[in-house]
Structure formats: C-alpha cells, structure tokens
Image (cartoon, rainbow, N blue to C red):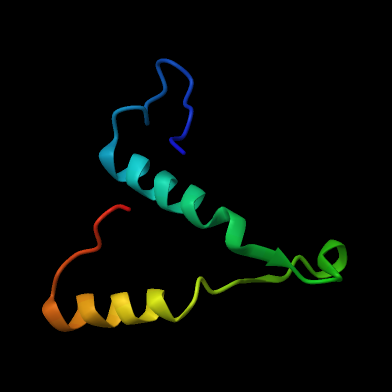
Length: 69
C-alpha cells in the first residue's frame, strides 16, 4: 500500500522516505498491543514465521539485498 502524501510535500519525491514509509506500512499489521497498552504504551511485533528468518539468513550469507514482494 503506497503512502499518500499531500501534493507539494517535500517528501513526495524523496526515495529514502518513500522506501521507509513502504516498509513501515508493510509491517503495520504485525504490531500487537499489550493488554495494558493504554497505560504502558508497550506492545510487540508478531513474527511472520520461520520463512522470514530463513530468507534473511540466506540474504546475509549471499550478501544480496531484499527485493520487494
């Protein structure tokens, strides 16, 4: 899901900002609030599974960069 920016925003053509925003939106559904979120502001990030860890290890060993799904 691409980020929607206001027309004329200084970030609308910034490749680093757009990459970071895309990555943030991609993992947003994995955040889960702790039961006392309102009091502590704490939560955790749910894992997408073993396949993610295997892919990251493979990339680290080969020195390649992650490609977008």
